[in-house]
Length: 237
Image (tube, rainbow, N blue to C red; front, side, top):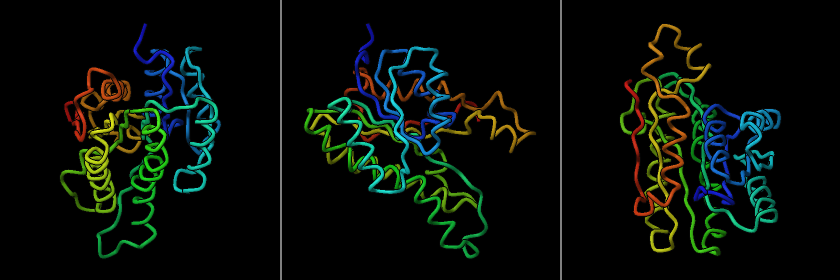
């Protein structure tokens, strides 16, 4: 029997490629899934992709809206009474202009999508984990968090903020059995990335299932002494 049997796992961005892979990984290990995303049809496709293994509920959520997140997490707790794992998978990427040509809306878009969403869910979930004496939180930063690149300033800054927020959350909760870590993916092998970078060697990219394996590890008892870590998952890129 898996250690995740009957565990309650919240997955944000559950309609996306990585969110779907993470959902499949936890479903295969017997977890109860609470899927959060704006894309309701996509979340149902995620449940279908779990091949009937998922005990899953869909919670349509605008993760950038604090009230929407509070409401969804309250409904998760009403359904399950606790949250054991929070996998903050939601996020995104856009290329941008030079910093001096960047509009406020472009900056805000990356910060909202990649950082504010994580802030909102952690702020709401941590009190519930404290009440149940522990939990695991895994955030998604990026390789770009460590080295800024031209025309990617808002994205790099937002992912760097996720990394630092992860470290702060880990420091605040390390004596409460709440471990908080993040992963730093390289280029993920998704249909969108293949379309956008058609000339690249896809074999060097990171499959979503491989990233999901790392998320599951960080949520597991094997990683019980790991907190505040930023785990690189670069593949061969």
